[in-house]
Structure formats: structure tokens, C-alpha cells
Image (cartoon, rainbow, N blue to C red; front, top):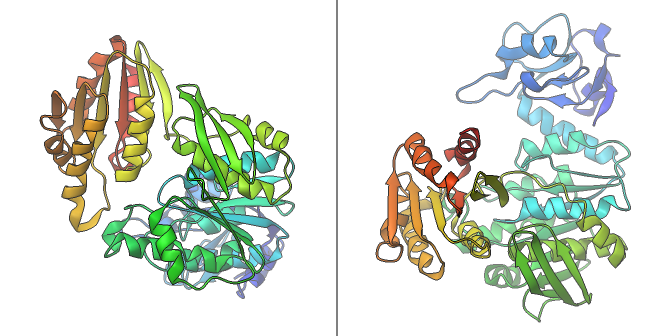
Length: 458
């Protein structure tokens, strides 16, 4: 994490400490949540539409913060700690991240994509950690606030960092360019996530491909060669001729491709071909994880990792939670994929769920948010596609998810719809004593993870 005296930090963003007696205050790390403050932190109060972090400065100090950025428009900055006055704390932390990134001798791999970027980050960080001091984006800190926090969390001696670069609207990835400065970038895929901010999926693909402009000269761009949108849109952009480009996928036309040997609730095994011929296994669920692994392998190979080092790394992946987690509660096996939801990730979860052996299967789906004007149709189509899976019962929650139920009418024999999450949880609880499997998935704001927690507590 960033470690420096307060004056040096102020100098990095061309500002001053209000009271010079605090110039030599040692800062160790950044905090934006007073509840998570640690001794030596610099507090960065964030002001939103419904909250104001400046109101929590007392808590931040009590929990160990020794200095704070402070919006000039906010009254009564504390006098007992070092204060740097700024026009806007979010802009200030972004500028600090840019300056800190410039001071680091760290190779950075940037990862973007509608689905799979967090899993790919976890996989690649594990591979590289076999040989290098490696750090990665914590959780899903991948937006205009999360990325600077990620950069500022890197240690000065960090050799390689794996950083997620998220997107909600056009320009988001390019905005992160000077904070991340990747020498390698991976684009996992393009889907309908955040379609509400775009006119079509082609625009999403074009916005995702901004990551190509972020890569250092003579760097490496790795993308999903099976993704038709990426293949089409990459032809329309100008690509730095110094970049190396590699493709991954299931299709033989890719530089590295694979075929699944086996998949079950213990993970997947697959054979790679093209630039690398070998067999790999990973204790992650779903054939889509094979694609995440081979994209990470291409990046790892550019750091000269051997096949054996890669296999060693695959055995030490530290997975981010709420994604394809198998949870056993009494007699019921729950596939907890409650982190986010969009049509592509729902189908991937269903593919994974299909591989689980169980005499009875129940699917609980909530609203998929952020899909724009065609959201009802996209939900209905998911219901239609349930015809491709072995499902005994569909349970939905939310107004949009009712369209999934409508689409599944005459496809799934038993369908239940709920507007009350507590009632849905009580209904699902009856399956805990049955030998069955249950898939739970919805957009993050629906907090289906709390449904799983409630079932655990019964």
C-alpha cells in the first residue's frame, strides 16, 4: 500500500497540508469507509447523493486515521489531524493513484469483459504468484473509485498486479488508462451487461475495446476469439502496430484453444492445443472457467512460466466469493452464483448446474438489471431457453423475473413466482431436507447472497 509522509502525498497531487505541523505524519494506506479504518490510514470521505463521508470523520479518527482529504465546500475540517483541502475527494484520489502508479516499477495486467473478469483475475494472480510478488484487485474494485483504491493498495515492491477494469458507459475504460497503464490486457467476452447505457451490444463491444488503447507500446492484447462481437468490432478500430495479439477459445482458429475432458462438482479438466499442448485441471465449476484459465495461461506464458509452474498456480487460486460456490446445507446442494446476473452469466450458470448430479433440480432466478429497453424480452428468452436444461422447478423473484416465468410456461412443469424475498426464502427452505440441487442467481442489488445466508441459518 502507499506509504509516505503527508506532505509528500500532498505534493503528489500538487496541494498543501493545511497545518505544516502534520507534514511528517506517516500515512500507511487509504480508507474510504470509517468502519474499515486501520491505524495510519488517510481517510478519503466520499460524498454521494444519499450520504456524506465527511460526517464520519470522528469515527475514522477513532478507528486510526491520522489524516484526511477534505472537500473545500465542506465546513469544519478537524484540527487534530493533517488535512489536505481538495476540490473533490474522488478526483483527488484518482490523481493520487495516477501519481503513485507512475512511481511504481510494477507490471500490470488489465482485465475487462462482461463476464469472467473476476475469475480470470483470481486465476492469473495465482499463476503469477508462483514466481513473482503479485497483487490483485480486491473484490470487484473495478470502477472509477475502485481502480484508484486498487492501485493505492499496491506495495512499492509489487512486481506484478492484476487489475480489473470495469465499464458501465463508453469512456470508462479509457478514463482508467493512466491509473492502470497495463502492459498486457485481457478481454474475456462481450455481453448485454449495462445495455441500458448503450444503443446496442456492438457499442458495448466497441467500448470494451478501449482497453486496447490503454496498453503500453510493445505490450500484449489477449481476447476471446470465439466472441463474434469482439471479432467484428476489433476490425473497426486502430490497433497499435507494436502490440502482440493472441486469441483464446474453444475453436481451433485460436492461438490457444482447449477441449473439455471432464467436468463435475469437483471442477474441470481440459486439454490445450495450439501454442501449448498439455492437460490442466482446476477446482472451479463450469466449462466457461476453462476459457478463463487459458486466457490467463497466455498472459502467464509471457512471463515465462513453465507448464509445471502454471499447474502449481492452478492449485492455489484464492476465489472471490458468491460466484459458482457450492454450498451444502443439510441434504441440499446449493450453487450460489448470487454476485451478478445477465443473460450470458445465467446461461453459463445453467450449463454448470446441468453438470451436477441430483435427482431433483430447482432454479431460483431474480431480476437481471441494467439491460435497457429490451429487458422484458431478454428475461422472457431466458425462460424459453430453460427447455435446454433438466429442471424440475423454477422459482422467480421480482417484476422482471416474472417474464422468465412466462417464457418457461409449458417448459418447466412447476413454476412459483414471488414478490417477497422472505416468503421465497421460506418456500425454498423446504428443499433443505431433500436430496436435491438448487441454483440461486440474481443481480447483485437483489442480495440473493442473503437468501443463501438465511438458508444456512435455518
